[in-house]
Image 1: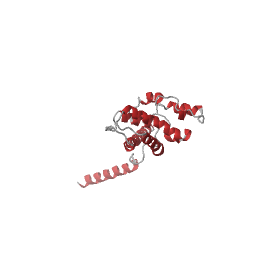
Image 2: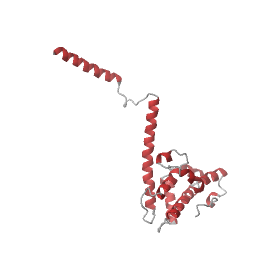
Image 3: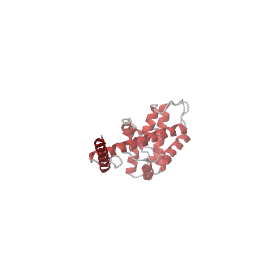
Image 4: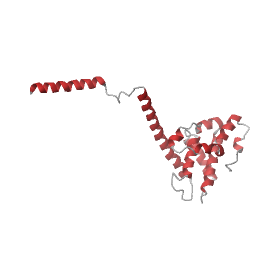
Length: 196
């Protein structure tokens, strides 16, 4: 499969609307990679607004969604020039796994993971690729993505609360209780001074 072929058979099917064809074409490497190459962190990837795999699947079907992912997997094979690259069956299986198990990832996530793999972030390839190796990259990324999203959410909550002067009741001491403790301590100190 040639990744530079802009008119992929799978996307030029008459069953697609012009809007669907345009959306899929926007995700092809020649159009999408220049945008993704600016993404350098998981945080930055999360801030991109691209469609999730489940949304793409709903709009154009599983076959076309998998075909889109396969374009990037073939590109990965070509760029790494390994002695034992992914077979066609392995590429098909990985695309299916991503659409089935990692459906909440978006295209930015998918392409970012593969770009990171090309750069060696997930370790040495040892002249071969396999289904478990590639799926492991997505496992690692998904965990990192969840942790980063949680951190971003906490930061946003903290920012929001500080802007509006709100804190959770568990974060802010109960003023009445604190006053009562201070009063009791003062009473004990006063009583102790009188007894001296």
